[in-house]
Figure 1 (tube, chains in turn red, yellow):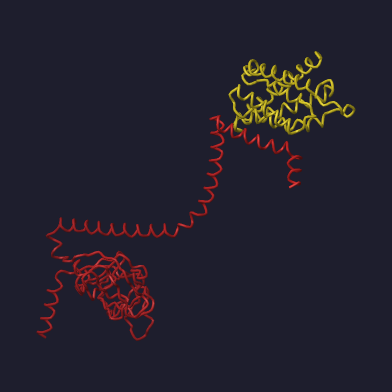
Figure 2 (cartoon, chains in turn blue, orange; figure 1 turned 90 degrees about the vertical axis):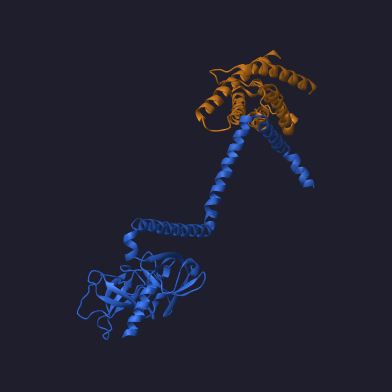
Length: 278
Length: 168
């Protein structure tokens, strides 16, 4: 206590100075508009720069959620594009209705892949559209890059498609330009490569040639992109087999388009009758 | 002691009136205003103690503020001067005449008094004008104001001191 009193007595002038100076600053601040604005604006500048620095750091914390939002938005927009393209196609096809209805009796339904696998030998794809949207069995599934699979089971609002990456599936394809017909299968392994079998023995192909659907199965229309020739198969047993690089990226399957041939029942019945007659 | 209080009080009243009635309205070259009233603070006897000097300085500045409508500014500047004054006094006071408690040309000699008054004035003006300006946006103008004000004030202080002490 004595020390404190001594301190105050010894430095009384300084303490008094600080107290009175504080009073002066209060007076200056309260009664002089200009000085107040100077004090306030310099204070604002300081807090502003502090907040700016803090924001530089904290801004990164919200990147994850922001990213998610942007992704969501992106999907919505992509969907919108598909929808508009569909509408446009409809418009175009209705304007030349007399020609197209006969040659291209295909209907399209846009959906989203909600479950997909690539690692098994029998892969399936779950699509968020079902019978109420007009999806039936044996419709083809494609996306913007190429073919994806064929619908095998349909419920009211969902459907399951056999992925192209399924050993059970055989799709009739042809080499563009040359026109040689083959059967496309996948036998496990790398999801970006498939085999094109049963090609004519006499033909020779060069790597890079395009493979498209043949249109023979009546599931896919003719001319849908499948992939490109990578190289002939190294396996000695199947001489006329090519390894195909698929154009569809099965790892990133999201928006798909289901195509249905409206005349498929008619075709099937005809085929059945032909077999009966044999 | 009583006599000293009387003389300083009367000196203060006279200088104060001069300041608010005349000097506050002088703007030499548009910027120069003398602040002669700080002569009172320079005249304060060293014997009254530091705290008393600080307090008196504040009161003088505050009274001037009331009349020149600049609350706090002059008080803040004179407060700085009041704090600094005893130290300056000790630096410049003559060694052979350590009994004298009042600063004047007669006691200090012209040279010492000139420095004493000069430093006091410059400190006071610097604080005052920096508070008034509030920024360093126009350093040349601010510096020239400080310089001119200090010069005018210093000349007037020297003149006043000569008159005041020769008349006694």
